[in-house]
Length: 309
Image (cartoon, rainbow, N blue to C red):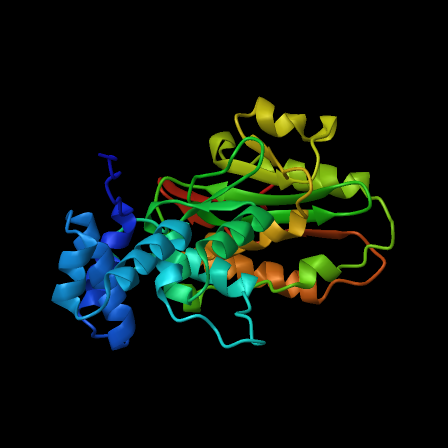
C-alpha cells in the first residue's frame, strides 16, 4: 500500500485560513477552500471532507494541490482572462513596513501572508522584497540587505552627500523601535532617483559631513553607501558602521526604505522632513550636501550632528 504524505499547512497561514473559513471577510467559495485546507491538515480524507462540505472528492484534491503549489494566494479566485493582477511594488513595500494585524497572529510578514493580504502571489511579494533589498522583521521593521545587513531601528537622518563619486546617507541607529503609524511618516518619494548632480565631485563636502558626524556617538552612526571608500573609514574607526548597497540594486531604493523607517518617531519625522526640503530645493547640476540642523533624540539623550567638536 502506497504511503500518503501528510498534508502540511504553513503555521503562518493558519490564522488567515481560520478567518476565511468563518466566511466573514471572503465569499463562500473561498471559505470552503479554506475549510478544505484546514480539514486536510487535520488528517481527514478527501471523501470525508467532500461529504462534509458538499463537494466532490476531486474538488478537495484540486484545492489541496493548489494550496501546496501557490499557498494562500492559490485559494483565491483567479483573475479574469486578459486582466492579469498587477503588483504595485510601492504597495508591497508600504504594507511590509506595517505591523501585521492582530487577526493574523504573526509578529512579522511572510511572503504568503502578505500575498494573501494584497491579493497577489507570494512569489510576487518575494520578488519585490529582493528588488528592494529588504526582508521583514518583527514589529514592522525590515532588514536592509546591505553588506553588512542593517537590522537596527533608526531614530532619524543625520545627513546626506551625493556627487559623481559618492552617495552617502547618514542615519542614527537606536535600540528603541519607532512608534508613529506609517501614514504620519514623511516621504522622500522618487526624488533621490531623479537628482541631477551634473557629474560634479565635492570631496570637501563629504569631509564636511563626516566632520559634523563626529559629534554623534560612534556606535549610533550608520552610513548607507553605494561603495566603500578610504574617506569613510573614519566612521568605522569611531565605532560606526558602513553598509554598502548590494550588487545590482539601486542605492536610492533601499535608502528610501531607510528614510521611511527613520521617520517613525516624532524627531525622526522632523529630520526626514528637513531632508526632503533639502532634496526638493537642490540646485540641478551641483552636488547635494545636507546635515541635520537640530539634535536627534535617541535613547540615552539627544545628540547634535551639527555641533562643531
